[in-house]
Image (cartoon, rainbow, N blue to C red; front, side, top):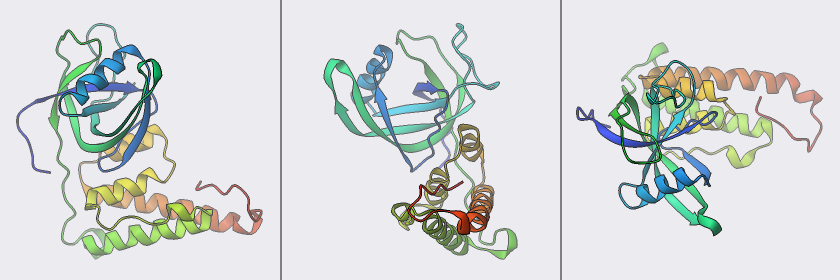
Length: 226
């Protein structure tokens, strides 16, 4: 993604335990009136909604509403299922990450922010340990495959090689059962080299635990990643 100097407006959907990563998907159920309006406005324009983690020392709205983290991810509504009484099921696909600069006053019942789009530094030709992008991608694909097999989750073993370098590591992270704080940590990393190192280390740690507990797990049991 190329850097963008101009600010742009993003509708904010603040939630306490949800982080969206670029090129991953997130299903949501929209039922509150203000977010029904937000969804309608998004569908009538750019189809973008900014997923924002609540809490921390990030940006506040200035009118007493809860603070949110400084960095978020805009998701495109790629599927919309309208339900009775105005509720909706939607599927978001992460489009780009951004940093909130300020929240201007608007007439909308939901929060809106002026944001700067945050590009990510690409993988270097030779990363830590002498591994280039192709090698890092291969390590990630094989790590996820082995982890899924060990956990008995064969449906989660394949990563699409059509994903970008960022999309691949983000999708791998999304399958690790990370909590919101860990997911936000991944989102906030500005260099793909750092994301790959963190996710690969996490995969290795989970794999070691599964290998250690393997002899004690019951066949057909509810195996967990961690």
